[in-house]
Image (tube, rainbow, N blue to C red):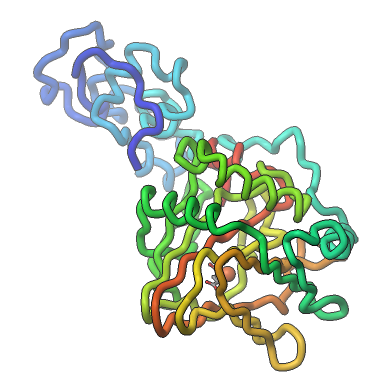
Amino acid sequence: APPPSPPSSPADIGRAALAAASAVPQVTADVPSELLLPLYEAFPPYFSSLPTDLQSLCVNLHERCTAWAAQGECAANPNFMQLQCRPACRSCDLLLYSNRCPVPDDLSAAYEPGDLDRVFEAIALSFPDLQPRVVSSPPDPWLVVFDAFISAQESRALIDAGTSLGFARSTGIGPTLPDGQHERVEIKSRTSRNAWCKKDSVCETDPLVVRVNERVEQVTRIPYDNYEHLQLLHYREGEFYHLHHDFLPNFTTHDGNRLVTLFIYLNDVEEGGETWFPDVLQGGIKIKPKLGRAVLWPNVMNQDPAARDGRTYHEALAVTKGEKYAANAWGHIHGFKALQEKHCTS
Ligand SMILES: O=C(O)CCC(=O)C(=O)O
Ligand SMILES: [Fe+2]
């Protein structure tokens, strides 16, 4: 990914710290000579003190890291520099999750035991304009369909945001990396494409998108910061997402897991593309995509919001005619967005 905020550097005055000193032909600023040496030559104690699986990750990811470090950018722009220019900033120890991601001060939970039922019970009474229908309720898992969750104009704004951000083949969550995050891998069971409504994108400036996020927050009573950035989806004819659960496996990060999924359909689909819940009610439930419609379901148990509700497996059936646009809003127990900025989410 491109640097979110590249340091200001007047000229190309150095090379990566891992380049040999002889490979740096033109040094036009005062760069300390040790920064021009390979890290393990210049700082053997520092390098060998790192756990072995971190040593291979202790590299500069940008060729101007050394020069930026010499200009004081490690202190001026730490979020970017400490991860992109690890050896140059002597920040390789931050590759360890426990070093990089101290437990947040505010670990309050969006849902305490019992809150999930309270939130779902209140929805039918509090948001009549959104046309909610309780399709399933305890002792079965909650499942609420809103037939007017967003307007045609808001749907258009979300599709346009996805198009401008660029839809790319969707991935699944792969093995845990040494830095505590997870590899993203292409999976055969999911052929859709998606875009993330990320920070500093049109999603944060378009009032229509902002309004949708506010509604998601109000209806679910999960704060905006606890939500992952909206994930915008595009399925072309034949594309699908096979049976899966939205609760993340093996997560250990401070954001906690996904409490609920609010899934929004952004267009009418000619044929297919239903969301199928095989274990909700007798014989399962299929939700047909429809512009403005949304489905809300829990991924966790009412009595224990840290535990997965194994009954809300679901599948996006293949679009058999036309195309499908949709959006996922995933609300976590704890804050998510601020942690993601520090690369501390899964
Ligand atoms: O497209 C759908 O109907 C559901 C998609 C889904 O379950 C997901 O993206 O996690
Ligand atoms: Fe899903």
